[in-house]
Image (cartoon, rainbow, N blue to C red; front, side):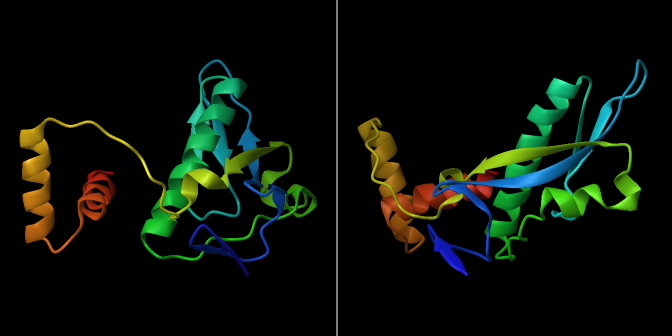
Length: 149
């Protein structure tokens, strides 16, 4: 099991230290139907695009969104299958086989120092809200962002 940035990954095929790859399958579109995308390893993760290029872009957004939700919910991240095993699935015969590369640094829970500029009145209000909620300024900002998504 790999502990990467606070997230536990089981034997994830890494492209580099900061990237991994999920196979996708794309059902061909036509003049009246979009290209449909399914990510076999991520239950319920699907997308579509009017063109093949758009389908790939939308698939990447869908995979990243699915992984973010799973991490937020404390769920296990499924291990990506090999391209060979996905290519053998009868349901997807005749579909286009592709991959989506995932930047793991975007999914890390590792803290990073940032510098922001806020008006004093906003900062004062932020500090008051954080204190009332038993949190630090940084912790409360993180809470607000995660609650808003």
